[in-house]
Amino acid sequence: MKKTRLPVWEWITVIVCISFFILPMLIMARFALQKVPVSLLGRDTLFSRWTLSGVTATLTDDEFRPALFLSLRIAFFTVAVVLVLMVPTVIWLHLGGKRWRSLVEVISTLPYVVPPIALVVGISGTFRDLFPWLITSNYGLVPFYGLLCLPFAFRTLDAGVASLDLRTLVDASRSLGASSSKTLVSVLIPNLRISIMTTAFLSIAVVLGEYAIAGLLLKPTLPTYMVEAQGQQPQGAMAVALLLLAGTSALFALIGLTTNNRGKKQNETGLVI
Amino acid sequence: MPNKMKGRSGVLPLLPFLIFVTIFLLVPTITLFVRASRRIEGGTKPAMMEAMSNELRGSFVYSAKLSVVSALSGAAIGFLFAVAVTRIDRPRWLRTWVTGFSGVAANLGGIPLAFAFIATLGVQGLVTRILYHWGVDIYDSGFTIASFWGIVVVYLYFQIPLMVLVMLPAIDGLKPTWSEACANVGGSRSHYWRFIGLPILFPPILGGFLLLFANAFSAYATAFALSSGASKLVPVQIRFFLQGETITGRGNLGYALAGWMVIILIFVLGSYLALRRRTEKWKRG
Image (cartoon, rainbow over all chains, first blue to last red; front, side, top):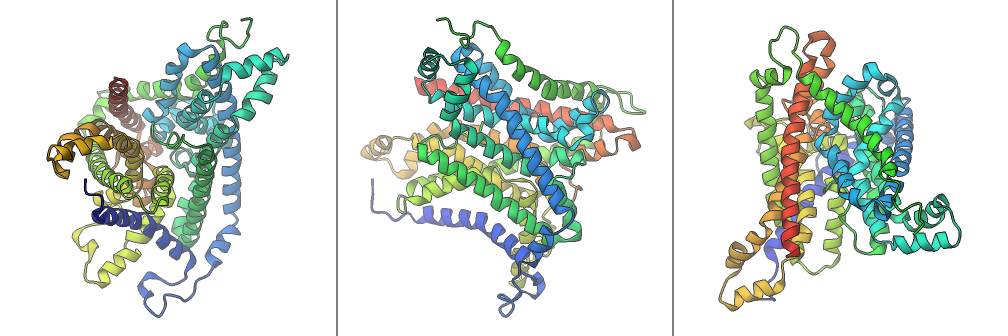
């Protein structure tokens, strides 16, 4: 094999792809931060009127903060629901319920088969009469957002538990006289903190970006706010979108950092089922 | 072992999980299909049949076409990108960086992505204006950011990274000895790819395509924001019928569309899982 060949087409491909990914973000940033209409943009206006006023105007907007805080609260409760439901379940699967593991794995990927836009149709048909609170309350979104998190929550936690010597940890803890719940709280959860944190970050990212369910049930979350603001103050909406992207990317970077420190285990999260 | 955590208690510990999924996923899905099999006001057939016999069938064809084109182009570009990245060894950080970025971008989608592309390729988008300045009017040929090709381009933003995530581990699985063996018997690079590389990578490429198809087919927020709710895509149409439920009496059509969507996704993702299971069996030898 010729080792000395310069990777020419490889670099061209990489540069074209990377520009495709970076350009829209830069342009959105310009739109959010520069008060010059596109039609007047030229060599002499390129550096003028860069300002944070669009961003600050949005941050002080009366409807922005409630939307942000609602999304954050829903994210908090969703993380709680996902972890309380999945951590004990996955641990049990590895201890005594091995036979059920593949069943749970298949069930946790079902939310991909019923995507949010189809799920919300079923939700409104089911609970509008049966249990209207789920439709009318803003926090009714929590269980459904928890459901959207199941696929990656299962995979992440399952990989985390599999990397522990679970049997030994549990037996050691019991022989020292700890109860099951004591073992869970002071032995297992601390050992699983990386996969728990990854699950939490991914869940927050999902909640902050989800629009299908929130939009159809008319919930004033952050993405709904962005869509509404797009018409009246596009610059502000862009600024929020930019902040959301930066925030989400920061969350993913954190995930990357925590998992990289442990080595391996990348790509096990996210969309890939 | 007298161990309470060792599952002699049967499936009891699994109950919270099963109950949660039953209430919040299974019951709504069943309702979905029950409502979809009812008739719409003034109709004679179940809504699901109705949805396939009137103009809505066009929506499905449109959605399916868009998903196929988006998955094909995403898979092709993503594959090339992944191969290119694995073959560049200096600077080392490039690959780490691309992997990390793909993890983020594959999950992006949604409203912010639509905004970014409106600013880039919208009527007043920066790239649109620059191209216009250079004498290329992309809007002259009927292109808009909410049109078929507009949406395909925007979806590439999360499709390419998803394909990269699928392909990188598979490409790493290609052993250098194979290409050396090929060279030893006088084969060129193109021989190698035609007779060794691509056939071996075929299952993950096909799997990636199915995954990308499902991904595009179920995407909603991006298309909605790009088109301000006016797209012909099935997910956007579902919203239209559901919101107009009380006014038009044709709300069951929304259920029917969602029902068909679920059926198609079961088929596509089911094939993906079956394919992956086969590949894993083959890998274990």
